[in-house]
Length: 404
Image 1 (cartoon, one colour):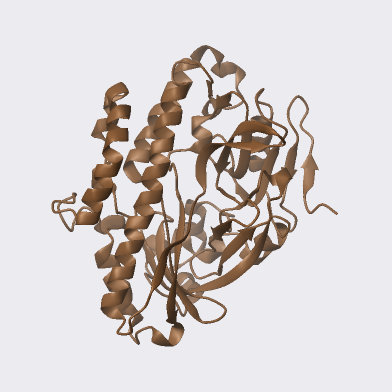
Image 2 (cartoon, rainbow, N blue to C red):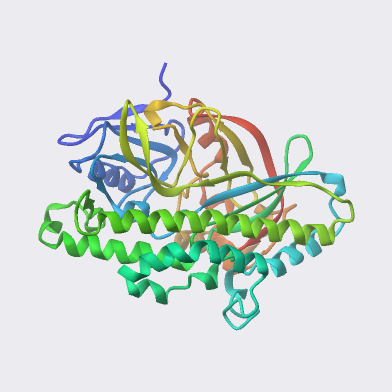
């Protein structure tokens, strides 16, 4: 028996929702229906259990299209995703002072409000690994900026190897067998934001005479063969590559920092899993090549490993995809917010945050209250709702968390 529900949309494609047992806000349902009515949706929309209101399109949705692409559906945090490294350590090998371990990681990876202070806002003396990675990325960036010079003024090389702010994080986790993992969440940083913002503006400008016919101006799109379609595909692909490499760079820095603080020698599979959850790519589904936009969703092809993080202080999961075709082989990208950051700051106190993160070495201050676990959906309910999409391989609990 299917574990999902089907929502018919008059004048549009149907919507398949893996949301049983988790709340879906009315505004998110309306966004889904708006997207489903676009003329180029292929088959149906697939909705993950972490679904919530986004910009133009809901976060936690999979949008398959033919001959068109929606820049705002991909968003401005292009290629945002997760990387996890499994180590040979066990929990007993971790130092008694987890605060020192957190401090070492914070010093190794520029992040949050500290980024820009350590070296006057730039990699004035970039680590060799950052320089080498930028050399690999630079030719593609030059091709993009030749056509769109405005993007050259973005924080491109400057942000490579940096975490960012908001819900981006680095964690030390322990699995069900006491094995130690390092995990982090980040994407394409300032340059991805610049690329996303530019092409959202271009899509809206190109469709200016048609915007009144769209249910939301942030559903403006490029059709294949149009003036900016190929430029966007090239730029978004480059930003996704930047994001993947950025995560790998930071993970190398995290492992190196941990080696300085943990006396026992250890190995680390630095690229055990490295997956996007805000991106678009060409895939074949139901026998046809289509563009698949995952806006807050992870690819879950049969046998493919992915990461579903819980909120700060909650469980996270390493999962294996079951290749469920109706979901376009996808799963959720996390627990999903159940309230806005503003609402969370109004509703919860610093004392609530301290209680919710007991046992986790992390920041406990007013600036991270919006990331309190109670602002997110119940991760166990989210996992239960998508049991036909993925199987759980490892269950992780955080012991150290660095917030951006």
